[in-house]
Length: 150
Image (cartoon, rainbow, N blue to C red; front, side):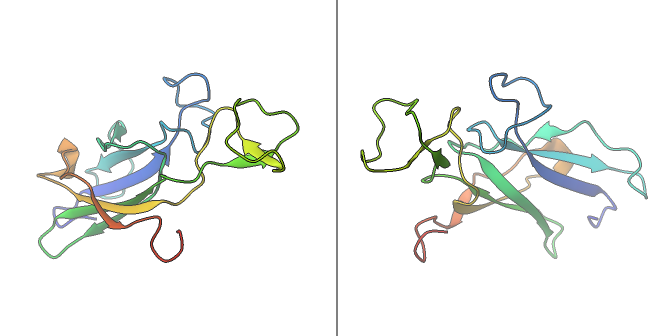
C-alpha cells in the first residue's frame, strides 16, 4: 500500500504461442512476455483497474517483478530480463537449421524460441502517480554475466 492508500500489483504475463494478442494459456519465456500493473483505490482491494502493460523496452522475456515504495512515496519496480540464454530441449530432429550447437550436442532450441528465467536485473521508478503508468528509463543493476552468469 502506498502512502496515499493506493494498492498496486504487478505480475509477469505472456501471450499464447502463435497468437500474440490473446492473454490466455500463455507460454512462459516468449520474447513478448511482459509485466502488467493494476491498482485498487478501495480499502480492501475488492475492485482493481484494468491491467496495463508496463512500458518497458525489452528484447527478451521479463520476469519476477517486485515493487518497493521508498520514504518519499516513489514506487520502484525491480525485474529481470532474459538476454543470453534460450531454453533448450533434447534434440531428435533439429527444427532450426542451421543449428548453432555442435553436431555432437543432444540439445536444441525450442519451437517457438523460449527464454530461460533470469537475466539482467533492472529497475525503473514511477514518474507521478502509478495509475498513470509512466516510468523512468530502465537501469541495469546487475548483468546476467556478473558472478558467473545469473
